[in-house]
Structure formats: C-alpha cells, structure tokens
Length: 293
Length: 65
Image (cartoon, rainbow over all chains, first blue to last red; front, top):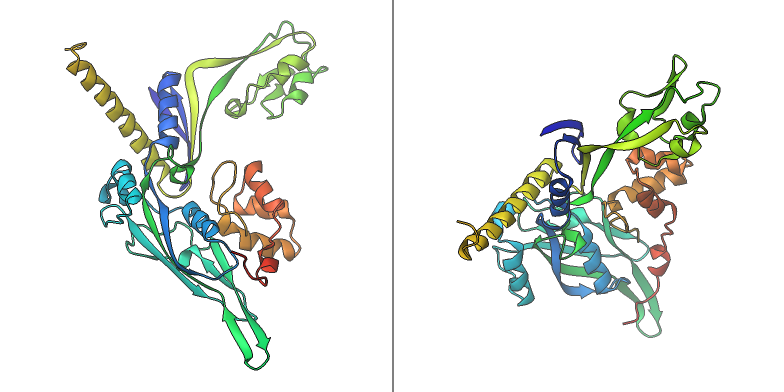
C-alpha cells in the first residue's frame, strides 16, 4: 500500500491511497462517520427559561455545539455504558461533563448567549468554537395602573450534560462533516482518431479543466487528473469517439473533514482501531464455535 | 436564530454568522465573504444566503406555553 498526503490542515485531510481494496477503505470511511466516539450534550436540565425560545429549541442548539473530545476518549466511559446511565438519570462523573449556562436580559438591550459562555466542569471538554450563538435575551417594562412600572427580565439558567456517543446513535456525535472516497480517472485518448485542435469539443466540455491542448494534441493536464469526477462529458462531446474515461483499480482519494472535535489524523486512527476490534470479536466468536483453530 | 450546523453536511457554521452578516450589511458581496470564511460547499453556503434572522422580532412577544 502506498499513501500520499495531498492536503492536510487542522480540519481536512486528503489522502491518495494505492493498492487498497474498496471495501477496506469504505469500512474505514463508514467507521469514521458512525463509530468514532465524540463528546456532545445529551441531557439538559433547565432550571429556568423565561426567554422566547422553547426548552427543546435550546436543548437542540446545545447538542449541536461541537465539544473538544481529544482527551475525553480516554477519560470517560464508553458510549454504551454512559447511554444506560443517562437513561436512568445518573449523571456520574466518569461519564458526564457538566456545562452550565446562565444569562439575564435587560429591557431595551439584546443579550446573546454564546457557546463560549458555557461553564464546563472539565477544561478538556469545551466548545470548539466560542462564538456560536445559543440564545438571545431581552426584557420588557410594563405599566400597570396602581403598581407603576414592572420590569420583566428574560432569564435562562440550565445545566447541560455531555457524554461520549457514536454517530450511528445521533449525527451530533459524528466527528466528520465529510468522509468520502472517490475514484481516480484514467483517460485514454486515441490520437489516431482525434482530429486535433480544430475540434476542441472535449476540452470545452470538461467542467473541471482536466483536458488541454499541448503541441496540437489533447492531453490530460498534469495533477488535474485528481479533479476528474468521471462525468464523461468529454466522451459525449467527442464527435469521433476518440476519448474513453476509465478508472484505476484499487486506487482512491479519501477525504476526511472534521467538525473540530477530533483531528482528522485521530479520526482515521480511531476508525482503524474500531474495525480492528470488530474483526477481533468476530474471530473470537469463530474460535469459540470451533470454525477456526 | 441561525442554525449551529449545516442541515445537509453537519459542518459547524454558527460561529461564522455574526461576521458574515456584519460584512454583508457593510456592503460586501455575500459570495466573497463566504469564500473568505472558508465556507466551500453549496449546502453550507445556502444556509447563510437563505437565512432570515427573525428572532429579534419574536424577542418582544411573550412565549405561549
């Protein structure tokens, strides 16, 4: 197997992988989406909410906030254990991180509560982005005859409990926004059939700019071959059927884009570990049944 | 309020809204601002382009519950 890193930064990784069967790569991709555990708010205890936003709306917004999970994977109990604890209302410290949010509005003013205002019980688990608006608050002044001015301040006071979970349970736990693989094109041009520069049909048809003329002949632009989406517009456009788009066997591009909860590198490592573990369990079961030695 | 994540791909976008709307209101081209903020896919871009922030109007009405 040969792997080239095409692109790598804080959130994205793009790998060019040779000699890998598609089903192996696909299982890594699927494990990245649905199996790699991350932290996300799962239960919210609302002490007070006199804002215009409903409790469910607040709980949903809190759940969507990405929380840093790099250290949490070792520190906290696995999703299956914590799910049960959560259902029974046991917010134990080995499973849950408490995040508190408080805010009071003032008449004539608009107060925004941000994800950065969440007070966390564990500094390793905190919102990835501090500027996600969670709620807005204000206040009203009402004149009541005999009582004068009554000031009403909108207030939010809540405790959110985050735990480890997996993407297959709810998408909020998925560490990736993109996990995709694509084929790499192999473009064959029959130079005998091609009429040359007076045609240009394929070059103009390509939406990705993969093809170009070089010394009067159609050529694949170097490095652009990775951009080819195998749409076959060039095949359709060619009046003499001189171009064929095929794909390379066992060679793919894997793209992972993280939501920020884990680094792309960590997501790949964890995904591979999970597949490894699943296969180990499978083999163990076969051994137990005497199918394998 | 502006969604925390893109409905389609799940990428966090909530933290970009305030800068986006500030710059667009100042007269910048929305497409250019989104390019600048690193919002690439059209699923995420439509979240910004099609959003009407209605919460500031609702804010002054009492909640019925």
